[in-house]
Length: 116
Image (cartoon, rainbow, N blue to C red):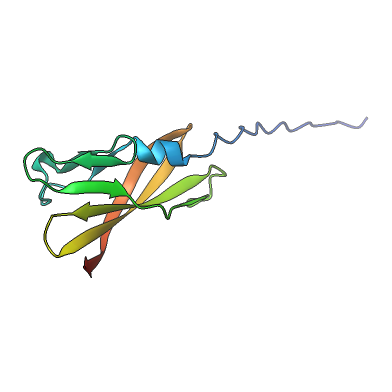
């Protein structure tokens, strides 16, 4: 007598990819050492002005959507630009992971200082 063994593997559906709209309405964390009190930058419609420090933050038009961690969900890379009102601007690079369709900040890194 032969025995038939069936193995069922549950394959979860990939989450919806992160979108530019999500990047434009996200609270980015610059860390405690940033010029922003509390380090949080709550971008809305792609921009935010720090009421205490005067810096203006905007989401750079260049971004990337794709799977960064091999889980089959489309994550994102975003660049946040800080204009301090002086002669330069600061660029911060963020990796945002897709967790069930929601963006979760993994890490950020200062990229460049641009002199105008």
